[in-house]
Image 1 (cartoon, one colour):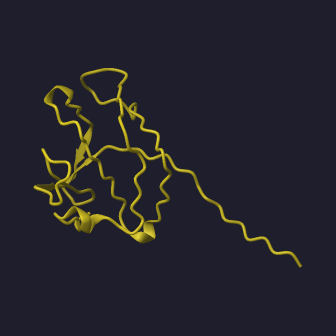
Image 2 (image 1 turned 90 degrees about the vertical axis):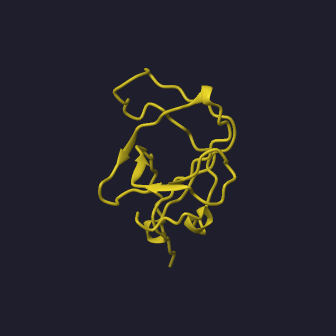
Image 3 (image 1 turned 90 degrees about the horizontal axis):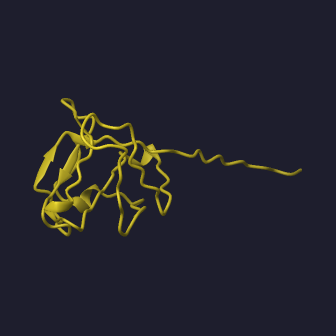
Length: 123
């Protein structure tokens, strides 16, 4: 938060990982308000190993089908203090520079699995 660049490439770390690629059909239990608690699930095709020591977590969403008839709305949070940020462009998925920045972020739940490393020594 607070350090997103308008240049998308400047926001990507050395651990950049594509976790899902391809067509995706999203469904919700209901339409209209209020928001549903995390009922849209996207299972990752490739796991991502996040280390907070490497910096903030960046969720990069690219939508290749931009037809108006397929508009999808997601629940989002607007933070008056800079705890979440977004940089975004519209109309060109290959844009290298964001047109806008604000403190709005998708309400997102990440399921985690702890990785335990065991060091076994034999005498």
